[in-house]
Structure formats: C-alpha cells, structure tokens
Length: 236
Image (tube, rainbow, N blue to C red; front, side):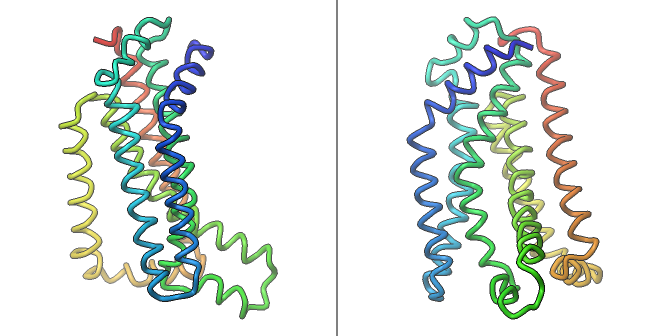
C-alpha cells in the first residue's frame, strides 16, 4: 500500500469537487434552518431540501470522482502514479465518503424533524439529564445517517468495481425498488414492525441492534469492494 500516492489521490478528488460540495453544504444548512424554524411550511421545505441534498450529493460523488475519471481525463494521471487498483480504490472510497459526509451530516440533522417523535419537545419536558438526552439524540441521528451511508456504500462499491454507469444505475434502481416496496407495501403488513418501531422510539435493544447491523453492513461492503479491486492487476 502506497500511502503517499493514496493521499495525493484523495486530495485530487476533494479539490476537483470542492465548489460542488460547498454548494451542497450551503443547501443543507438552508434546509436545516428551515426545518428548525418551527413553521409548518418551513419544516416541510427544509426536510424536502435535505432529502434532495442527500440524493443529489450521492449521485454527484459517484458520477464525478468515481465514474467521471475517463470523461475528465484524470484516469491518465492515476495510471501514471505508482498505485495499484487496490490503492486507487481505497483512495476513491475515502474521498467519496469525505465528500459525501460533509453535506450529508448537515442534511441528516434536518431529518431529525421528520421523526414522529418531537425529539426536542421531549427533551424539554423530561427530567432526564442533558447528557442522557444528547446520547439518545445522537443514537437517532446515527440511525438516520447510518441507513443512508449503507445505501450510499452499496451503490458506490458497484460504481468503483464495475466502472459502468449502466451497472451503477441498475444497482441504484434495484435498491430503491426493493427497499421502496418493502417499506411501503410489505412492512406495514408485518406484525412485528410496530413493536420494532416502538422499541426504536424508546431506545430499546432494537436501536443498538440496528446501529450495529448498519455498521456491519457498511464494513462488509467496503471489505468486499477492496478485496475485488486488489485482485485486479491493471486499470484496463
């Protein structure tokens, strides 16, 4: 592993995307401000804007630094460096996560206001300590952000391994179709879903299990992607 080259590749990707990420972050901050305004219309607009930021930055990061290497003529620069496909993949996934998480963390904060539970209202009316409230809020925040990062990881891995817009869109569409149908049509018919949601709201065992499952899923996706890339002997 050539850490010096990996660092250069990370800096290259972040530099090329700096203005786009700044724009997404600004939009996410506007969405957070609207969501926290206390006005019903502002809350709806802020949540919608935050969701659009998450979707937009997910596509932009995958279509720009990952799938846009050949189009932007930066692949020749990568191939000129003493880097293996595994090194390039590690740099790519690191820069992609950095670029994604900067606006995504702000946008995910706005999505707290989408919760059926008034997080901040319950904090004000409860006699629990501030630390206890912050831990509970952080767990909910990690749940929201972790779910999106897991989704992003799967599609990002497909983009890096396949280097194909077609396959990446196919994986993205499949995930949205399967997940959307499960949430909208299947989940409400399952008897245990209601209890699971209530346990999440109470901060019960379901919350820690879900967080661990998200973390394990992200780690597994990254590990498989790096394993596949390290088996490649060239960039061609």
